[in-house]
Amino acid sequence: MGVPNIENFSPITGRQLGENGVINTADELKKIADNSEAGINTGGEPVSATNRLPVSTAELGNVTATIAAAGKQSNIIDKRGKIMTVVELDDWTAADITFLGCSTAEGTFRPVYDDYGNEATAIVSANTSVTLARLALVLAPVNYIKIRSGHASAEVAQAAERTLTLSLSR
Image (cartoon, rainbow, N blue to C red; front, side):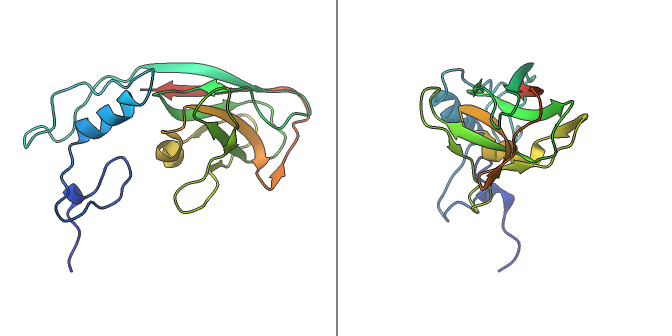
C-alpha cells in the first residue's frame, strides 16, 4: 500500500483525489475567489514543476467583534475571502468560543462544524491572543460569522460587554 503521494491530496479539503484526479492549487484558490465577492489574491506564478505553490504577500487587517453585557453572541463579521487567524480578548467570562456561520449577512446563522462533526471551538481565557491555525480551513469557506461564548449545547452569557479583536488575512 505504501505512503500516499502528497500530490494526490486537495490543499483545500485535504482529501485524497481519485486515481485520475489532477489538481492545480492555483485553480483551487481561484474557485474560492470566484465564489467570494471580495476575492482572494492568489498571486505568484501558476503552479508548475518548478513553482509548487503560488506565494503572495498577505493583506492583514483587524476587525472587532462585540458581545453585549449578558450577551452570548457577537455582531456579524464579514470575512468574505479572508482567513481569520488570531482572536485577541481582554476581560472574559470563562467559556470557550465557537462560531456561527452563514453565507449571507441576512440569513440564519448556524453552528459551524468540521467534516468530522466537531463544533469549531477555540479554548480561550482572559487577556490572551489565540491563534486559529487549527480552525483556519474549517472557517475559511464561511462568509459571515458570529463569535459565540460557549457551545451550541450551552451558551455562556458574558458578565459585561466584551470586545474581541480578530486578525483577518487574504
